[in-house]
Image 1: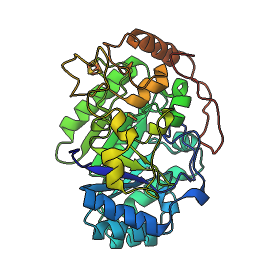
Image 2: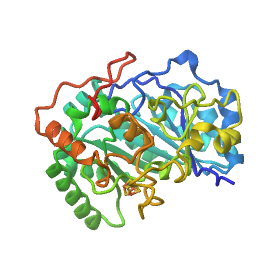
Image 3: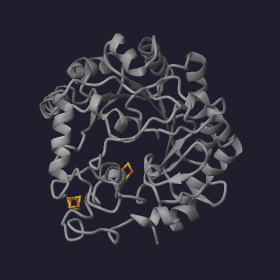
Length: 369
Ligand code: SF4
Ligand code: FES
């Protein structure tokens, strides 16, 4: 029997007031009229708890655009789920933060784009976003909610990492997630504008290590590195269909937030089938679950149940095939080309951003281009 997932990402909406070029949402964004209604989300939350899910992460887009968010949080809390809200924060005020806390929210994760307002607002594609976020961070603390600050870092803001760490301390965050951009969706489209040089990553790693030692007991720092320059790929999602599932705004159930970029997979919907059935039996979940799908070099590799062959979406995005070793792995025959491409892009002048907007720009950053 398939063990149950630990967590569920509930993408309530793709609507968002910001336009970050590193968003991992799909290029083809879902519109408001296709979103699940409140009753269906409440049923899905109950089904998730019955299936064995422990944590629900409310996300988007911007989940605070959903007026029923406090109702959904209360529903999740009633079902016994740990609730985390992943938000850009710019639409919150004291009353709304208080309502979320009263609904039973356990934790809030606030994104910031940089330590400085001018560049942060440029990355967000929105004026005054940074100032609003700082104000919201303080409201979250005042409401007694634990706060994680999530800073997505890339070639254009990595030099501010020490200041970002100071900002997290100043805002009273208990945790800082320093997340290098993961190249899916809009981030892949903007990779040349975002991908750091190897030396930048090494410097950031040293900064994080020093800060972790200095701030032990005051601030936990999570660090998510890009694996283009690594020896082995990341263990994406803890393995395909093994630990997490993702429900899109319209109700499709995916093994990860980027799974729809893999063509040829059919994703079932909570409007048609129960979450438990989809988790256990849907073809898309079974396709890359475990190790049976693997070819060499993964098939005979000692790490095949450590990183599960890396990221399926990255393999598809870079090589047009999801059933091969992630090219981020140094054992992949495509790895040298990937590193060459990454070094070339990172050394060139960054191009202008393609901001996240509901249109359909061409995706063209793979090894096949
Ligand atoms: Fe992981 Fe496959 Fe690379 Fe081995 S060959 S390290 S299993 S991606
Ligand atoms: Fe889809 Fe890694 S993001 S498997």
